[in-house]
Image (tube, rainbow, N blue to C red):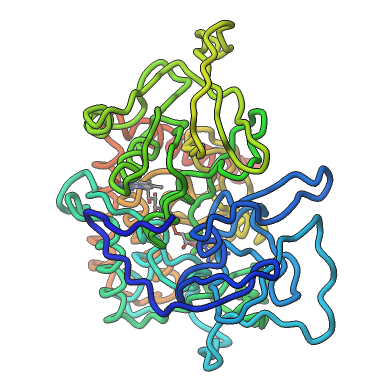
Length: 491
Ligand SMILES: Cc1cc2nc3c(=O)[nH]c(=O)nc-3n(C[C@H](O)[C@H](O)[C@H](O)COP(=O)(O)OP(=O)(O)OC[C@H]3O[C@@H](n4cnc5c(N)ncnc54)[C@H](O)[C@@H]3O)c2cc1C
């Protein structure tokens, strides 16, 4: 269902276009993805799974999982949650692995006059979220030329769907909406020696003599970019929760629900069960209510609410119960969610027999944490270490955000799950450290004062009870790096 009225957003939907879905004519809008257009047309089953032929809908909306793979214009395995809809497209539900594309089949994605990709640049930055954009702006302040690459057509990373006002201090954009912070960063980038390359995926990162080589995919064409330093600001992916029928269409990650509602103006369903009472679960619940969607309950296995109490109070005032010490047991439905069963859990998180309740919901939204996207760093040779407080496996990095591979930096959620405000400061630090490496005669005083400013900001944001977890995680990481340096010195 398309959202027609919203207290904050105006949906500028672009030109109406026709496309074909399993032999039927459907209408969508230019600028939205295939999956969003199908969702608005009430289509939930996008593919059938390989082994058990189970129905699958879309889950992540950021091109990270394989739930939305369909056959488009005879090309199999197209990620429809990130592929823009074009007039006249032939979209088909895919069974299993799909069949090989006939000769000459090609997916028309980008514009014909697509931008040329440069062959070399001093600094390549992967990800145009708050971390990547800040890195380019701060490296640019020291005169370093960069290319910022993002797989999405619109820069901003997760900020493009965050309609709420940020918390924290005014220095860190408090009381500014996420969507506006993204736009401000893009504006700041315009005065820098930086180039944005959107709609471009970085597939690999390799050694290339005294530099690095990135393999890129844009509009179906592969290209290679050589860079002397690389900053990976690739963000994070949403976690899944294992319960019966957790793969049923209608079970989404919280970020996917935000993308559907706030970017494309499409409601995920009519009645939602939110799993997770951290900040993301609470904020997305509020945004669902703003979009006119009913939230039946927010549940969390923890015995207390993990997010800010001001967010919890807001949704409680709007009549949404928040049930702590509760979990989801299963979702039910033929081809999409028709109900969900929850239960109370004891202190060991085991369901309490007899406490089961079935809720009449058509959507289950999972807000159960994020995992850093550090694959490119690992591919480049960075050591992977497990730090639970940073979200799981992360690439080993020092205080300058440099990994153990010289010249490869990692910043923002990709280096450990935190917030956009810390992502911007980490981006700044990584940009400055890369600039120091690339411009040996850079103004040392300017560099030191910019670095101090970013470090102070990070210290401030990581102080206090909500910053305890990442602070602990980062300290563990830096201790690990020091231990390794000591070991190397000793050997
Ligand atoms: C509901 C919600 C509410 C939030 N509220 C707040 C808040 O109030 N305050 C706050 O500070 N933070 C908040 N956050 C957290 C914040 O959004 C993230 O911490 C922040 O966006 C991380 O920034 P980033 O630049 O590291 O990554 P992202 O914003 O995720 O950007 C990474 C970008 O890299 C791109 N990318 C990844 N891999 C590749 C590749 N191989 N090739 C090309 N491109 C690639 C991605 O598509 C993406 O655009 C919230 C998050 C959510 C989901």
